[in-house]
Image (cartoon, rainbow, N blue to C red; front, side):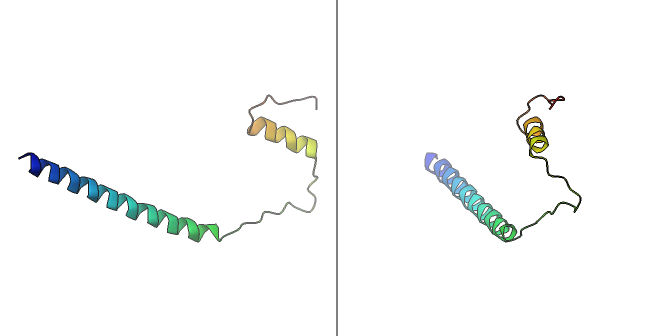
Length: 71
């Protein structure tokens, strides 16, 4: 009886591992197909590049620092 339970348990584990490996390889194939695509975003001609203002945006959005109104 124990042998039957153990064999069912190991079969289910084997099946789970095989299915998990299959899903991982499908994800890698999709990722490789997407990694060949590059998107280039160009600013408009009248875009004024202000490094200080850009740094404030980065600090506020990404680093969650308070917005500096005086700068």
